[in-house]
Image 1: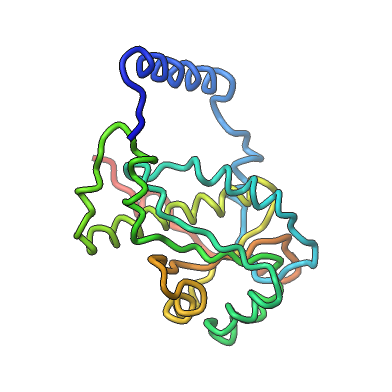
Image 2: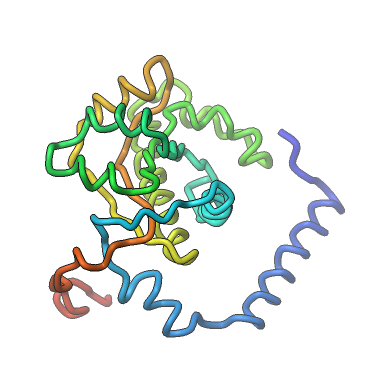
Length: 221
């Protein structure tokens, strides 16, 4: 536990507040084009060009993703970027047959996983108060927290990829048990979902499926 105290804490908080005010004064709203790119007109993709993704782009994507909020800054997600032919072959063992070609054709497939022992890192991630006791010896609470927040981080990763001009296609048609055996055996990590990332072949797209209106699924109370 190494959180700032006293004057150092006051200065850190003042800087954080000033930085946020400066950000909001510089950018108060994304452009319509930016919103279209990351969500409104973005599509899930299942066919890919052979254009590769450089490792420094993956690093930038992660650097954006890691800033998304999680409960108590737990950051339980762990990411395995599968690029090699060997890695793809190992991952293919877990997939339903109809998903193999989708994964094999993508430059990168990310295994979005979560660490059940995430809470052991709280002295670093949440240094101003020791909250390890909330999780120690409570596997169900650990699993609930890790799964929920790890899923959030997977969504942040997809939005970060789109913001960098990449395309994504999330997949759940696979065996978590096989992925965990193949990639995480002997660890405290568990797989959540997969996401193909690359530059899409748009010729495989079909029309966008329907979405609910606000009034169909939202309530203001």
